[in-house]
Amino acid sequence: MIAMIREMVECESPSLDARAVNRWVEMAADRMSGMGKITTYAGGAYGRHLRCEFTLPGRKKEGRILALGHSDTVWPLGTLARMPFRQAGGRLWGPGVLDMKAGIVFFLFAMRALRETGTEVKTKVVLQINSDEEVGSETSRPLTEEGARGSHAVLVLEPGTGLEGKLKTARKGVGDYTVKVLGRASHAGVDFESGASAVVELARQVERIAGFTDLKRGVTVNPGVISGGTRTNVVAAEAAVEVDIRVARLGDAARLEKKFRALKPVDGRCRIEVEGGLNRPPMERTAGVRRLFERARNVAAEAGLRAAIEESATGGGSDGNFTAALGTPTLDGLGAVGEGAHALKESILVNRIADRTALLALLVADGLM
Image (cartoon, rainbow, N blue to C red):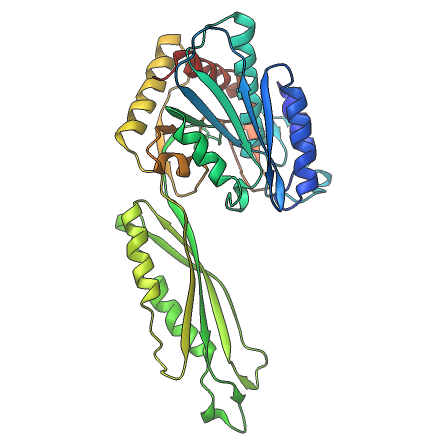
């Protein structure tokens, strides 16, 4: 398993490099050869998406379990030169090892275990690996939602929470807005009063926008990137802010939408334009999600897995947000246990490889019906 994880990490696959991602997809498809029916789908400007419907023991199959992963990483080509794959200190290190190439390997070996032991599986099992998850899942979302509608359970191979590897039963919805201010340019020394500063107006609006945060409801609004103006001696004609939003409940996204669209300029000579909105609905802890988590905990206990199965909520999004929002019971965070996703210390715990792989095999064998 470590050898395959290394192979997948060392085949770098940044989101915005379709050729690199396709190279990874070809390698992954080759490793799945003989395990089931493999199909790839165009990803537009991104790499190809991959699906494998596994051939598993057992004659009659009812329903379908969809497992979700992603091939793309946040790391640019060449990262291995300063952040090489290595095994040290009881961990595997490298770009994308935690988020989320190890989780994909876990699932492949879980399916291999079921095949080699002749364990009867009651349901169809499909693994879908998307190429654009780290950049918003623009082209894979329809494929993911189509897969979820035809499934009775979704297992997401993203890493668990913390060094305990807690499963994820809730994720915040994610969105972004761009608020642009159009002012009136003038010479800052010769004709100052004729100008209407977009930069000054934007500063006032940023204060308002930041005030949309409501920590008690799990709503965060972060004005993260500001641009504007041309020269210090010119009253700025344009300025803009890019804003990240996170919501725990879908209704809060609608309330934020109204607030953003209702922004009015303090200086009447300026005009405000707003673009954007929610792009990942929240994964709410529904009754179906709770039942799926309890099933996982019971399955693990019955099998005698020593690692405790606990749950968590997170502010980050995944493709599980889409499936849960459709009402398909979704359990997230079933991948590797480690820390440092998107950071130089990205790593996974070697001593948690076996139990996570076993849990995936047990969940699929259970059928989750």
